[in-house]
Image (tube, rainbow, N blue to C red; front, side):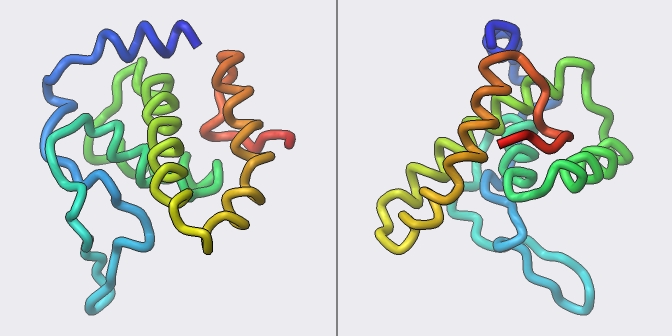
Length: 138
């Protein structure tokens, strides 16, 4: 985890910082004539693009995350340190999502069911094991 902390401390507001949606996931995309359009700009603001990516891939399976990153890199190449930083932003996204949904009694059961997976992700993160693109043993 210290590798992640060091990378996060080194972030600067450069080309990888700017206007982001901050909550872009499949539930915040509508389609019109087969084209996707983002909605719900309530969290929109300035931030790191990797945070926006983390928000977008949080609900995806590992192979879908890999496809997302491959598609993203067709538009903009990520740095060598991007994946460890993305893992840190991924956890920030999880914590924010849990904080938001924990207030809703109707969400409690689902959050409880997710705990074994969330704990497996956290173990991998703390142990410095990559986790974004491979299934984890729960």
